[in-house]
Length: 252
Image 1: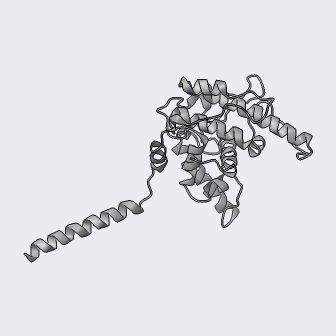
Image 2: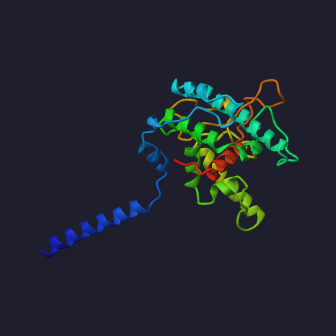
Image 3: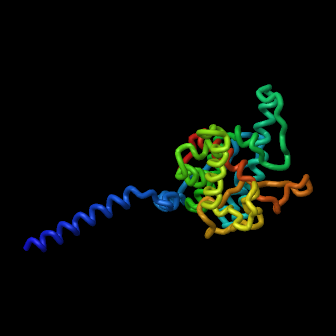
């Protein structure tokens, strides 16, 4: 009789410990779990830009609806270039930017810092809607937030790291590599250095790509300088966009 009671008690204790262990362990797939719990296909999204002189987002919607992910990503970059530069130009004219310059050939960190929240939300929601939560800036931002509370601030150089400069730099490099591995941008054949991201042409522009693989905000105008599809992706611009997303209060 006592043996039976001891066996029952042992089973109960084991079950309780297993439950506690699983609840305390962080889930690596929490971004996927969060995305899968919501049906984004019914999202209502306005297609108008907050800047009257910029085109609307009808073409981006159509490309996403057709599952043309690469073309949609390029359209995203094109729209971000146009809207971002128009915003910077207005700030220059108003005297807010005295030493700013406009880069007409690619999305820059400067234009990302002041990108209109309304337009950023529109782009993000369109990607969420037509990928059903798989792609979008807010998906990328959530992945970074899972790396640490201050990860985004540290990675985008908006906050100094703890300890010495060398320690802060090491922390940023480690966080950056972990993030780009999560979203499938990591170049496993790189000889390290700064070029650890894949080239644009090597991305997987399909719905089977890792969560947060798109969009890239990568855009170029052919024939202007050395900025081509064969360059490593510039994740610094993406990080500034995600920081802007955070300051705009846009989240999943």
